[in-house]
Image 1 (cartoon, rainbow, N blue to C red):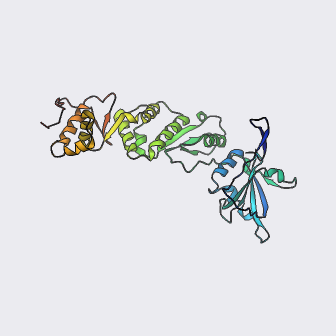
Image 2: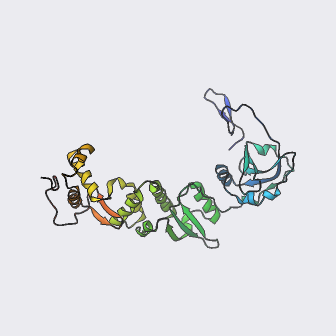
Image 3: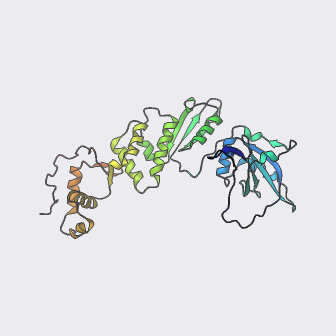
Amino acid sequence: MSGGRNSRMGDGRSGMIIQAELKRKQSEYEGEACTVDKVIELPAQRFQQFSRALLADYDFIAENKNAIRHDTDSRHCLLILDADGTDGFLVDPQGYNYARYSAFVPNVRSLLTPDVEIDRSYLSPAEPWRDENRDEMLRMTLHVDGKPDYILVLPADEAYLNAVKAYLDIDVFADAMLRDIRFKVPYIGELICDTDCPAVEDYNDFAEKLEAIWQKDGMLLTYAAILDAERPDTLHRARELLQEMDNYQRIVDTYSYGQQRLQERLGLDDETIAELEGYMDFERYGSDCMEHDGVVETEFGRLRRLEPPFPEQEQNIRTDMTMGGLT
């Protein structure tokens, strides 16, 4: 972020870019005198994380909130600076460990005089901060000789992953040993055989795709049924199956499946299906269709694969599929 930076406009003139928070239809501005009691510098990456989650608890606030004085002349604050930039935040935590009151100040570094002391003790790599708004799909322990073990939670963005590598002082995750890999849903992990020794990036890609179906009704059980039926022998194949879920259907009950297949086969609408209630044995027809469609039993329910169907499980398949008992 930059307090002021020239850029070329379309007509050749220079335009100034200023980071600011604009308020809609603000009728007046009431500034407040703020006294800076301590200046703290953060690594650029951590400063950006702080700016995106001001209400999270932070060690640099918790450890310095008592340095803030209190009087009636002005509000006393911490000034949090970007080590690689010129911008900062005024923070009055009011005794808390988060930025209870805050104000973004562009180009604030230019206001500092040479005699102002800056606390740079937080520039050393701190334990990485992960966006807590994301669901946890899996976690693993990273071991690097000479470093404390680190629990990596996935999925995560690139900034967090880079921060973890910096924290462990490694260039690539291949320099760390992966241990104790645990999925949030244990049965998902139990159904995946990682014989190909996947990398952290592979696990993260898988976790991101798993996160995408996490909140969708019934999708997780469908995926578990797919894993149980297909038995992928690599994480890569398990990830592909996540992308192929439209090719599968988990069948909840035989009666509804009979109605669905009759609609598909004869092009009937819902009203016509309703009129057939009491005349059509949907339960029997659904059972016949499941045999014909290669539906398989899994620990998580019955599953149909559309293309190609699973091999038929029964030898005595009914061949009269037209009306399933309706003559």
